[in-house]
Amino acid sequence: MGETEDDLLAERRVRWAENDVLHVDDAAFHVRFGGEIPPRELLSLPHVTKPRRMVEAYLDLLARLRPRPRRIVELGIYEGGSTALLAHLLRPDRIVAVDLAADRADALDRFSADHGYDDVVRAHYGVDQADRPALERILDEDLGDAAPDLIIDDASHLLAETRASFEVLFPRLAPGGHYIIEDWAWGLYLFARPPTSPSPAVVLFEMLLALPYQHTHVAEMTVTMDLAIIRKADEPCSPDPIRMDDAYAPYARRMVEAAEAAAAP
Ligand SMILES: C[S@@+](CC[C@H](N)C(=O)[O-])C[C@H]1O[C@@H](n2cnc3c(N)ncnc32)[C@H](O)[C@@H]1O
Image 1 (tube, rainbow, N blue to C red):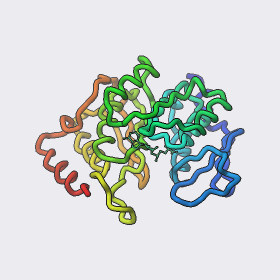
Image 2 (image 1 turned 60 degrees about the vertical axis):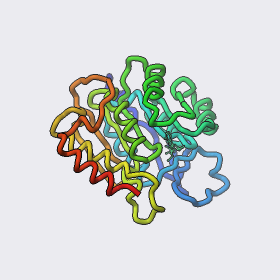
Image 3 (image 1 turned 90 degrees about the vertical axis):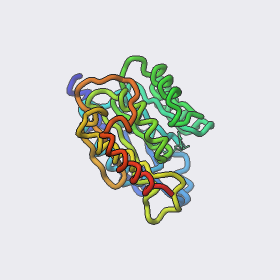
């Protein structure tokens, strides 16, 4: 891949305006998380449902990734702002996006049509991230033999669902690719309502226990307050699904069970 292509992100005109509006070249995105009512004049912008600091962390990370991600899978579309932003920032060959909600994100459809991403963005609605056969079929259909090089899980933030997606999708990630679990600490926040499921943090604990065995092909984990960024090893591996509880020593199972019980509501 040529240097110019790799430098594409650096060439974008990216700038923050007031009210947490992010401009990327000719498009603007409203970045907001939480319940505040947006000013009327911003309602027509694609809405990225994240705190600004998280979008800043993404901008930082995406600018550093070499080569630039070309095939992206995103779990959790909501209003479609993050999918639109990834398309406009990275100009990938394909973004496969999945959401449990049955209704299409109109704002994403509009953005894709306006900016020529109709053939880039493939959005699937009414799909549970825990539905393993559905995820496999969608990737087969939309990516064929090509491996995604960036996968972002911003969907349920529930343990079983997060683990199911990881077990199916991580093996299919390209060598050296990145898998990001957003809000990995869901269910552990002191300020939040009591959780309804054990925290997805347990999956990170499982990855940690699996690290010495290389079974999962996790090369490195970088964990910040918002994001768990998991880099896959450079060696090729089978794309078949893994099971996390096969990935670490049997006696470590007791540690995971204890963590799971501790992270349960
Ligand atoms: C936080 S929002 C996504 C926000 C979006 N990525 C953004 O940054 O603008 C989470 C989305 O995940 C979806 N979701 C919740 N549980 C899910 C599941 N089990 N499978 C797939 N999607 C799910 C919800 O319907 C919701 O649209």
